[in-house]
Image 1 (cartoon, rainbow, N blue to C red):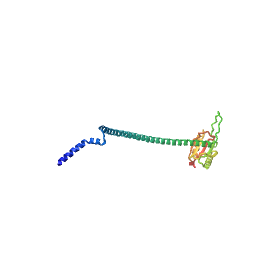
Image 2: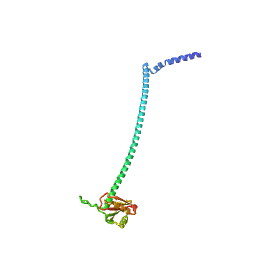
Image 3: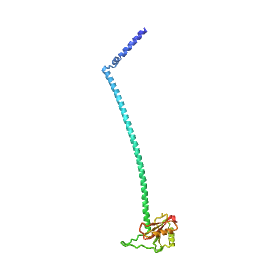
Image 4: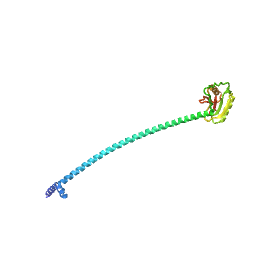
Amino acid sequence: MLCRWIVCITVSLVLLFGSGCTVMRAIDNSSPEEIKKFQTSKEELWNMTKALEQENAAYRKLLAEKQSGIAQMNKGLAERKGEIERFNGKVKELNTVLDTLSGRLSQFAEDKKAVLEAAGPVKMKPAGKRTPVKRINGLASINLKVLTGDGDLASASAMSEQLVKLGYRVKRVERALRSDFRVNTVYYGPDYGAAAKALVEKLERDAVAKPFDWPSPFDIVVVTGRNSR
């Protein structure tokens, strides 16, 4: 009896699975064409999903390439920025050097102007006439001027007294426009180089001799310096 029931149940299950589609059709009234169309639509959706996934992967790959390119561009821009900063640093250094040179040139021009003004007005000689060379017949014949180049008029007065004791005749004692002379400086005109060097040797303090690089009515101009007090 039990075996008969088992056989009946097995046959029923086979019939049920075999008629599954028929039962489903009976339930929703779907025709075989509609079922086939449904299966086709399902395959199309699956294919579309796969295509979209492939397209998404392609876009992700393209995005990664673009991001890599942007990173390379940013790196290049950073390097260019560093080069520009280094170039600007060099330009700044050059500007500093130029400013220093300009300041030195300006100071040189001011120094020259100060010495020219301190030497007094220039007496113009008639054109076409040659002035005879002035012969030195004694220290008193030298047209000599003393200027203070250390800011202290007393040093010029002391220098004048010393020169008078040595036999020179000082025509004028004045204050120079500059006060940054470090040593006594003896400026001399044409044909008075030997006399200026001889005066330098007679001075008790350090002194230097320099020729005039401007016209002057004086034969020798002595400028006192700070280190010679």
